[in-house]
Length: 496
DNA sequence: GCATGATCATGC
DNA sequence: GCATGATCATGC
Image 1: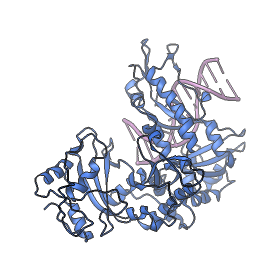
Image 2: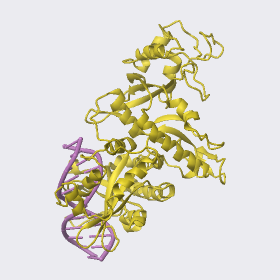
Image 3: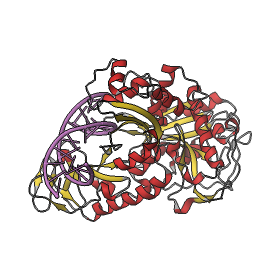
């Protein structure tokens, strides 16, 4: 029967919620419409409460974002969602959170979005004690509902796949608390405007509101500079881990750096990682290969392999790096202090890029949410010698001002038509911004082979494999964003 | 077979 | 010598 649960009993709530598995949002609405229950069940009161005067049921607009968010609370649990920062099921402390699963091309499930937890107030003093914070209230006991998102079908047909009780395990909570402290410390310094989601590991401070212009608020601390509104969230990579570990329970167990080394969680996770690497400063790549019984063959995986060995990991995947979305990058500095290579990122499709605005772009999202472990080696005339390591994320100004400007320029050229010159053989030149004209970003080919199909009839390579179509119908070798070696040099100059 | 990270090679 | 365009290599 609809709304039939005991809101003082955790088990009753869970058992009732569990029946959602397999239902679509449409079916939830249908069940409500076909039932006699036309009032909310307000969890603040003891019993069913008739609230006809405030009750106004309308079919939510299927296109409006976020509308699915209230359906389960209102029409399955029967309570009026409120804006009060209180647990949804206040008598048990349970917080209802729903989130989506996407299906990857290979059929695997992946967490579709970060999980928004609660808003961050910049306009009043911070709560210093994590266990007294709204964040803890909202995450200590989550009724976690996963539905399958499929952008090709109507949202009302999305199906609820899994219902679980979730609380962050102790080992994650240590890192979550460190993240919390990092965020509130930035706020206390009056630096809320410089917060980035990539500042932290599992608990992030994600932006809120449709763009920066419409969602700026003044800060209580410091110079009261306007800052972008933000929410606490579990970062998408962490939600991906939660999905596979606790919901699907099918995760291949990856090695853990902490467990491999019995680390002390009173020291920040980042510092512990760096210390493990710093133990080996001064050793050459050859010495490190010998130390870890790895053949010294200088192939492309060698320096990454060495990094994982220093962290006590046998393979090339570490649990914490997956959960925290840390990308390991080895950087080789030459005798003259320069880095020869630029750093590559994921290829993109031209027609998708031109549809994006900066704030919803793949590249902004990537740098806003990804941290890097830079491991730096310098050539000594014979070998590359370990210089040090640092955890890095792109600073606020670099990302939101410089990279933004450079990205927009690239997008506009692609949108308005790339101009090519060539000699009826490779290479094909184009009028896109070059690395020497940019501070941070440029794009360049990233494919197995060059492939073009141009208006003038020039054609080379397998365009369906190695190229993709431009808005004007020409095809160009698939490109990636690259970060300039000169920019990377500046980020690591303290290590050389 | 592709995603990801890394490096090569030619022309100016 | 360097910038740009092109390509390689590993792991999943």
